[in-house]
Length: 60
Image (tube, rainbow, N blue to C red; front, side, top):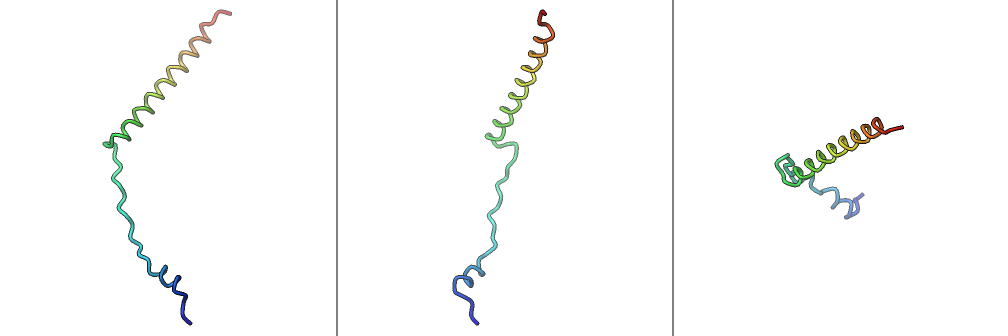
């Protein structure tokens, strides 16, 4: 029995994988994203602290 031509051709495909890019913290885009996230965290903490202060200092 012979195998169909399409299956035979797919069976001989290589398993070569492209090298993965070196993703390090030195890349400008990653640094910008991390800086943005850090600023967002700082802004969130400051907003939360301001809301707590406002609630505690609110005259009843």
